[in-house]
Amino acid sequence: MSNGLNGSAEIADLSIPGAHDMAVLQARNNSHTHTLKQLARCGDLYGASAPMQQLFEMIGKVAPTTANVLIAGESGTGKELVAQAIHQLSREQDQPFVALNCSAVSPQLIEAELFGHERGSFTGAIRMQKGCFERANGGTLFLDEVTEMSLDMQVKLLRVLESSRFCRIGAEEETEVKVRVIAATNRDPLEAMKSGILRSDLFYRLAVFPLDLPPLRERSEDIRLLASLFLDQLNEEDGRDRVFSKASWRLLNEYTWPGNVRELKNVVHRAYIMADHELELLPLVNPNKGMVSEQIGDCVTVQLGSKLADAEQRLIYATLGHCGGNKTLTAEVLGVSLKTLYNRLNEYQAKLFLGDVIPHVRPYGAQSRNQ
Image (tube, rainbow, N blue to C red; front, side, top):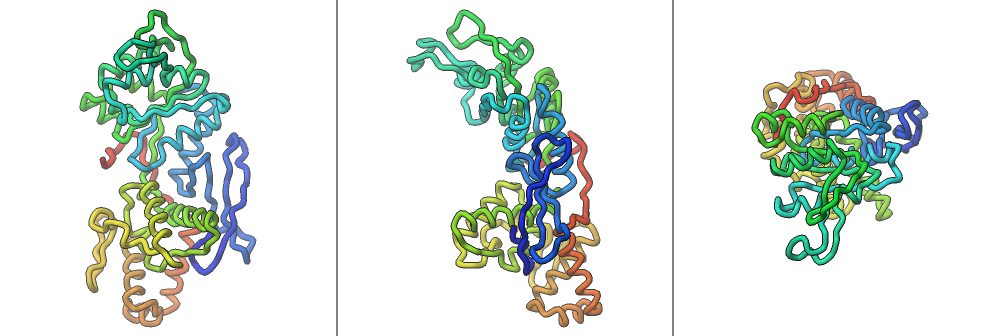
């Protein structure tokens, strides 16, 4: 994996004792033997931050069970990837994994999608069709955006969760299935219950084991690692050696990524397509929607609530850019010694690889998420 800081790195697979097929990737500098950064992987999920390490641990605990899981997280955080990881680490990993986005199916058709229908049961039903529950029998059914399901349909879903039985539309006999249900929502489930769009009895049936996915802005030490991973994958596919520009490296942690990992991956991909050698990310993001700090002319503004260390880091980087990368001039402008400036820059580089800053892990359901 390219670290983007005048060096290259490799990824080595290591095992985590007792974590049931979870892998740890360690980025190692080619010229040194010491570990620079531990990047854990669970299925297709990657992360080195404390929230992701905790998430991987929870996945490892719940996967071997048959408990239903409710995943809450903003759009683009990887809810389906979590569901797939749970399935892949379960005892039913060789059984079907069926996914349905409840918000993508009209209320008139979702019952047929879930439970199936008999031939002739309604106009257009020219043959018998199995529903998602029947196709997922023995395995896992993933219901994405479950809070978008109508209340009437939630009652029918609740009955299946309670009895493991349902009727196809137009059928006279019930069908029995053994299915683990993993549901997901981009809303706060507790707020959804309070507002009346999620039945409380269904919530408690689904949330046997709740998981809360952190937004990308709350796992900032993962941003550059993920960006490097996405770029390395594209370079490997095309046999190229493209890199991020210095401005792009600065932007990665200045932008709050409201679209989360999905937005980051798409922006890197678009920048890769547009680049000759260096990827420029700034033209591809909307700074009015997601900048943590702004540099307007000769001024740097920082949002209230930002950490003092983060504000200092942004000021140093902004001044360094304003001075055209001249560290001697930057130190003079900032009123610090050149040694102090180098120490700060080395600290920031170390944070990128050693994860010195561990963010607070938000407890489940304690904070509403942006929609």
